[in-house]
Image (cartoon, rainbow, N blue to C red; front, side, top):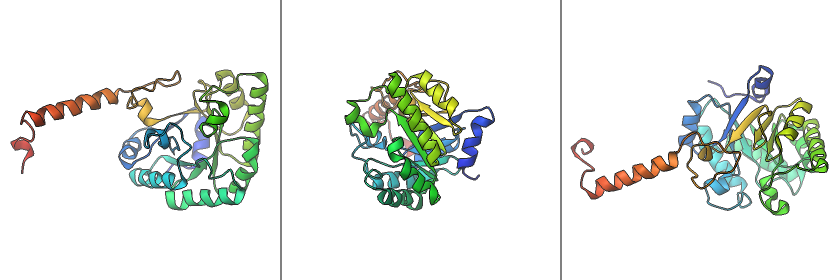
Length: 265
């Protein structure tokens, strides 16, 4: 089965459905996502927190994203693949941004890249699109700007902030973005952006009116047990299941019950 393309992804809302996206960072989970009805995988710089144990996404490098993107690409054949452009990989110049985006496609095996920001990165987006690199935008709560925002805070609450976000969204569409992530903004503002744009919006903590939704896989599966923000719905409690399984394993090893004859050569 061929991968879902950028064109096919854009057509999903037009057919009356919603885009379903999750993050993923390894081949094991990618195989499971491949067996599901999920449309797209983001190899996000969220790996800095989820996989590497950092407090922020800022330490993540292009090489990190490429490493994990390769693993995901090997593990699945159908979902649309998007690679995050980490902090510092696109802010310095359009030329450096283009080089890093090319690396993500050539070495990481993704079909598109995602970057954060609005009007200030519009020219960079346009340059990438000009040479054939699909770009997904990202507005609202942009984790790479955590220090500037003073923490992970809901954005776009004031009228001026909302108007600025609307301008940024239009600028990204005009620059050639094929879709746009809206993170951590009021539901009403997300609905305005979605109504205004021709490209699909994918929300996380942005209410139900977006054209799709994205969640971090480990969060929605309950593996990150201490993480319980308002926007997150846990569809499983695999953290508790994993601890129980480990304790059962430890009990059987210490009690001489494992390995038994069935599990010995």
